[in-house]
Image 1 (cartoon, rainbow, N blue to C red):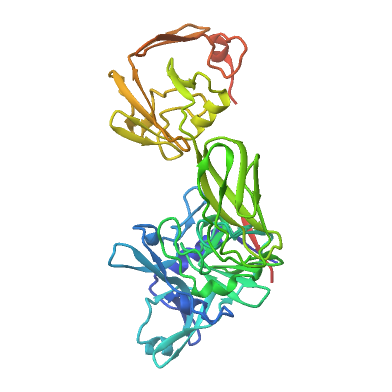
Image 2: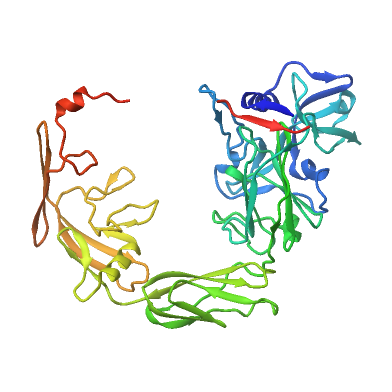
Length: 496
């Protein structure tokens, strides 16, 4: 068994990427790196008659991220770009195309001289750990199966498969991938004997996530069109191995049994309806005759045929998942909305609370479904990337809310708020008047903060006399705190 440290791995990455002043030579053979198109890179690696295509990207920057990783000043591995080790070209629409990878090669001096296109050949000062052998015929290069001088590494991880991915028709997630190295390629092998070559950005993501289109899903969330010709035959096959290609050679996870269920559509259409008690229908006309459908939504929902029935359903978005009990076909999903014309909240003392006649459950459901809040003339989307103008748990109006670096409220006076919530047909509008004054008094034992907020109709005063220690016990004297005291490299293994 051979051991290679993270530093050696990084050194291999940097060696392959950097030009040197002299050839690494072995007799008539010389070593360097070449810009190898994906179709040529994978040609000798796969049992698949359909070539691997270049990757088209409509985004402006991700395809440019081809810097390789390295060991940082702290001794830790620093990841390269999302398309590390690739080469590309810019397209007319401002996007780009990832053409292939820049990888070490072995070639005879005479063949190198006879090449009509030297494909960006850059000499190396020493023989690389892994390389592609190059032969030349009529001035054109052909690339053989990768030579791994250290022998293939055996990975001890696991793989999961889903056919419900936003990024393609299938996605696998592999644990235990090669560490502290850039991934130049991935080969997915199936029990049926077909292999599939994966490419940066469209297929290969960080942390072992790999996805691809098989002819059903046409685009991924960024609007990039999925190229599926090479992968269409993967439907209905079973993955047994996943091989990662790094500058150290092959690293393979074997002994897997990941079935890729057949997909016939990417989603189903479900009609929307009213909340409470009722039913909605969905389109199952495309289901194969041998599809044994079983549908699920949430508690209180039942599915029979193409009808979803429900009792006491709150307003909001729901997802119907239809599974094939026979296991042959992929699950299918469809989203739908149940709505109401009632508003179950009202504004009171700086927050949204349950309206008269509405339950706390009704109010809580409204708060969690808030999708946007307009303050004055400016609309702020809610959610992880939005601005939290109203707390989704407490209903409190967040007077310190920010959108980026911008204050939503500047404390200058009257504000009109318009609240949008998913499943609620009407927007809720109200006005507040914010004039805040804050006084802070500090003693050795207690910190007291008093905030006075004036609203259009009421004045409330909130006072906190609790010590800010994160505990409910009494505050400790300041003198106590003044006296108190406060108190690898990663190795990877390769099998011969």
